[in-house]
Amino acid sequence: MTTSSRTLPTIARAGARSAQEALLAPLRRALARARGAHGALRQHLRQRYLAPLERDIRTLGHPYRGGRRRAIFGTTLGADVRALRTWRGGSPRVAMRNYFNHPIWLTYRTHPPLRYAPSPLAELDHWVDNLPERGGDGVIPADHRKRRRARRPHIVELQHWCLLTGELFGEWERARRALPRAKGRISADECRAVLTYSRGSAAHFRQFLDPEVWDKVHYVFPAYPSQPETRRPRDRAFTILAIGDRFSDKGIPEALSAFELLRERHGAGVQMVLVSSAVPHGYRLPEGVMVHDTPRMRPELRSAIYRSADVLVELSYLDSLTCQIEASAFGVPVVATRIHHGEDFVREGVNGYLVDPPLHAYSEGYGRRWRTLSAFMADVEIMREDGRLRGVVDQVVDRLEAMLSARDELHDLRDGARRLHAERFAPHVRNERLNEIYARALGR
Image (cartoon, rainbow, N blue to C red; front, side, top):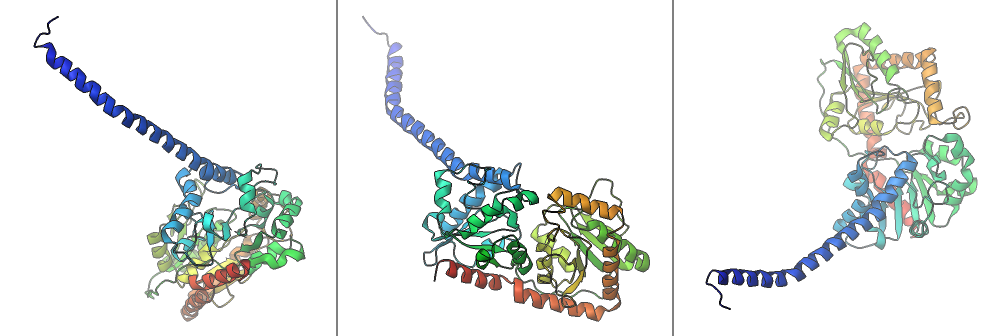
């Protein structure tokens, strides 16, 4: 059989394609295996980091619940990646676990007490707002990996003691019933210390725990970097600052009522800046209030707002400390409620004033009068409607009137705020105390 000249190029092209396929087939198979390995790696990382965190967050009721998967994924894996980039060996080897991007803990990244080690190479784990294991609490079953990491020496840093029991933050009565779990957790040899954020918080922790474990409960004041001093023109309006991620229990209604009274007396010589995304729809705000509707301030906005403020009014009935620390860094006096922190963040007559509320959460009613956070919030609303929070408004007005009438005293309060910050809340102060706790935990 003869082959025409037209079919020869076709045969040549077919042969070339066959040769090309023969060359490419191994490459394609290798690429498919690589893709499969990549998928398996992604699945492993998801199971190792993301899924446990999502379960923990659902249980703890953390504010990242319901989304922000990228932020969640970055908490544990991101801490190890950052440690790999910055760690240069040395001792002690401490790993930062479960870091969240909250102002309280941001300085662990920007002003760390030491170069944190990757978790697999660490001698001590520092867990932030979480427990090294969530098994044994009747909520999330333990697995071998969780039991293994619970057996490593660790420090637990928490805002609320009830998380030690494995219960939700708002389930106060259930947490009191689950106290044996907290005792077992703290008394374990692997748990070297439990940290909280003030002397008042540590005292609140201890009243629910056996005296035999009190020596493991410590406090470390949060840190915020010192800020340069700025001049404030004397002829500008007296500016009151209020900040709250929630509305009712943060005392925002009382702060607004106090401002309204001052506005009636002093007119445009008094103004207010409110930073909150929680103002109820249709709520009537007094004239002269500037609202920044944001759940979290950007650094530029935070700096501009504090530098323009003459006083921070922080009337929380539950808990509040971040804004008071930031205010002291900027030299802004504070008027705050006297809650369980006592004078840890506001010294009477030094950097501000304290007012006495008729109730606050971390008192004798915790877990008894108020079985849940929701019950406490409802009680605050009832007392507000009955006029029993009016005394808070009157006390705030008296303190602010004193500041308005004595500008020299206001200058002294600003200086007192900066001194208190340098003494308690500067990053190097926090880091020295943390390094002492790390050394004790490692027996050095």
